Amino acid sequence: MALFGLYEISKILNAPVRLESMLASVVNILTSFLAMRRGMIVVIDEAGEPEIIATAGWAGEVKGRPIDSLPQAVIDRIVATQTSLVVQDTAADPLFAGTPAAHDPSRVSFVGVPIKDDARVIGTLSIDRVWDGSADIRIDEDLRFLAMVANLVGQAVRLHRVVAADRRRLIDERSRLEKALDEKPKPARVRVGTGGIVGDSPSVRRVMETISIVAPSNTTVLLRGESGTGKELFARAIHELSGRKAKPFIKLNCAAVSESVLESELFGHEKGAFTGAVALKPGRFELANGGTLLLDEIGEISPAFQSKLLRVLQEGEFERVGGTRTLKVDVRLICATNRDLEAAVTRGDFRADLYYRINVVPVFLPPLRERPGDIPLLARAFLDRFNRENSRRLSITDKALDLLGKCYFPGNVRELENCVRRTATLSRSDTIRREDFACAQGECLSATLWTGAHHVTADEQLTALRRGEVLVPGLRPPVPPTRTPQPEPVHDAAAADGHVCEHAGPDCPALGHRAGEKERLIDAMEKSGWVQAKAARILGLTPRQIGYALKKHRVELKRF
Image 1: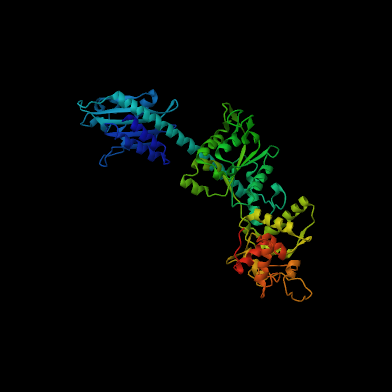
Image 2: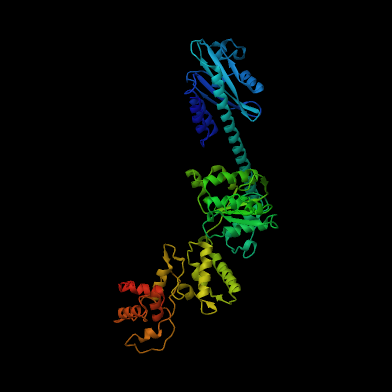
């Protein structure tokens, strides 16, 4: 029964509830395992005064407070002697003189044990029972059981106090930084510079103002925002604005490695720690000693590894995998995530104590749709980088930049960069025009064009452009080049010779959207052995356009 009782109490003490409720549940469950009338847990503060009182067994008609039944002299004696106290009859003991227990007509015995935090007593656990001398009660067994319960309670109280103190310190530090931010704003107009950040919009300036205040300290920063908003660049900006800029800036994407590899990547491993560990390898924490460590996608680590990471963040020390020597490091931590960590904490997927540890100063990065004025700056910066890397001299027109400004870009800055690079790669001239973004050899913007009320995919916009329609205000279809009238071919020689329109599509004259369109398509497919890519080269189209035409005319592909 004692072991079962300790098991049930340990489950209560591990529950994520307030300390007062937890201790009350412990006292209540003692009634199921001990012959007792009342029970009480008293937790004292630094001055020795009762801080938390949890009771069980007191009826509503009892006058006064339950703590009045336990004299201060009893608490003082248990705390001073750090030993248990047993009183056979409270009515006859001078310690209980002047209390309701001294006038109780029943014979009441008292058992109390100290609750310790290491060598210091932080409270008492006591019970009383009515004993007429006939019941077979073994005081020594009760004392051992209560002592074990008190030991578990002492560990729980210590843990709650440490977490509460740590949380108060972090809240105070956060309040101090927020106050400094309100009192001493430092405007930062950043285009291209710190950390490679490009932008001059109000949202970017606000982020840079926050970073300029937070960076000089060693406070942990949590960068939050959608994927592709440039969290790594802002983390590097924090490092470059801090006093650690001469030290290493180390980064790790936690979602890119498995849990077993993640421990070795962060903490390092000793030679022979596991299969393949042929030499000692320092971890990212060691490499970043004195500098800054960026843990990207922090919300993706497993709950099991979160507890290991929490120890390093709290104590600043760890052991390599397979090692026994404790290493201490001085690292400025920056975390980044696009997940809703608050919801993850509620679901139990993310530890609350780790969340409070990393969420000291949260910095929310704006998505690209909230900073459309930065799109031209970013597009020109990406094009300049492309020119340097590929020895090109491409330029971009203002109308092309206006088209980009109407794009939604769900992938944010990363998608804009891919769009510019793709169009620059496919460009046949030294000037990128609006038409090059709309349809460059049939390759469309992966972004969506935003109309305000709804968004139109680039494929839909491209089809509309070829038909002469406009789905987005301000966007005009490309003007086809002037051509010398040619006599209409009477057979498919024109297609075979590659005479096709520049903006070919599903309705392109290369297919002859007249009487012989389907026949020319089937003829090209048969010549190419029903390989769409070869048929596209015969007709001077793209594989995507061939796919459109096959679907339009319901031509079934032949398999060989």
